[in-house]
Length: 387
Image (cartoon, rainbow, N blue to C red; front, side, top):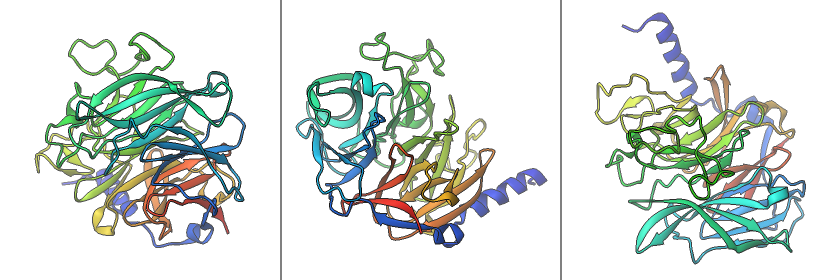
């Protein structure tokens, strides 16, 4: 028997999981080519350097970063960094994430998340680089300083995002290591790097080129848990983002074969994988010990057409006022873009605001918080615009 409140909560979750057909928000939104004269090879991330230069940076999965002026008329981009010789590219592997240090304007540091081969084995590397001392549109490839690496048992479910929070710490998303069904149960293994959101202090040297924030959930533990862990129980949190207004950390976690999910990440949170796939028991199929597990803010049944969610951003731009405060995300397979309205951390309404956006590999923002979309297949950068 479900109590009245539990039944109401379930009804809200189920209603929110069924996206409305394009409605008022869709009527107010256009998805346009942001830079019609530019093309990129398998773009997987877009960001800015927060240094007042109004430049944008696009990651190409094979191992390059390109930089260009944020103007619709821009016709050329420059190669900011080329590490193709280091990057192991293929499937979901490659150069996957870029984050500029909060003090980039002063120190020139930025951080990458990429996969590489060491003695024939696939690894994820988290590496710091520095901009050239003589050219702001060039990075210094010799400046590489490795924070840490960890093994990737398979070439899928690599996670790959890196983002700085307002606390100055670097947050890193990692997938469960791949294959099917998390065969090593990495998501629930607190001694593993995989299936996690990690948080590290890049201004500390206590562990070489980084340190452990004192309030990390497992800082100083004696059980052998990874001190870098911020949250766990994730399958493949491909993209993460912070809401600029609230500093809430969001992710889209790609599902197994039934459900996709959107999560708000909290310190020490266990998001259930592989015990659960979104709101369903997965392994075991029933009585999966769900006590203490955090259900997603939004559950997306794959039966609706979504098969690979791409996390986005809470919209804080000016071009589309009707999207203010809504979490905008997409799906790589369906090509749909959604706007999720929440209240007190719960889903209220999830609207389709655009369709046909192609293979949505990432969302990104410029320094004015306007929202862009990377189309992995076409190599184009799209933009949300008002009508």
